[in-house]
Image 1 (cartoon, rainbow, N blue to C red):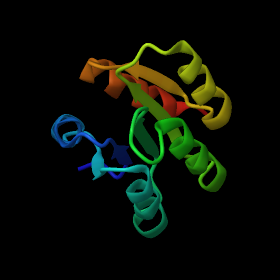
Image 2: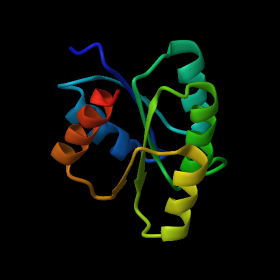
Image 3: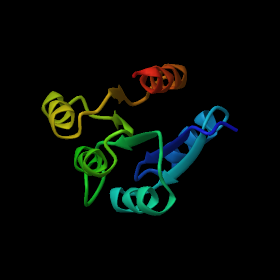
Image 4: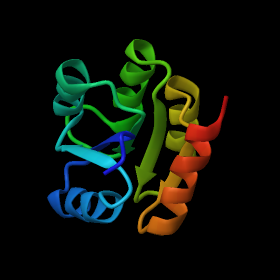
Length: 123
């Protein structure tokens, strides 16, 4: 197993299971079902090289969650997953959270893996 640690946050258990099953071959993957749970993982089990978050979640959306990640763990790569084609929300996520990548559901796991590796190679 890789020492590259990834935290995936989504309120849909099937999405988390799919990400964990697919990325788990290449990375050490932790999952969380909400932004609050994700922040707890970062606080108590971090650091993580990459945080991947869904956009639409109850209580705290992905942009809000990733903005908090950016504030406290600025070196962590932030990736947003979205099932909505809301350009305004995606632009807001870029502004407040400075996300490195945005993937629309359903995403291609090979493209996601390539993007993670590419982002981790950035100086």
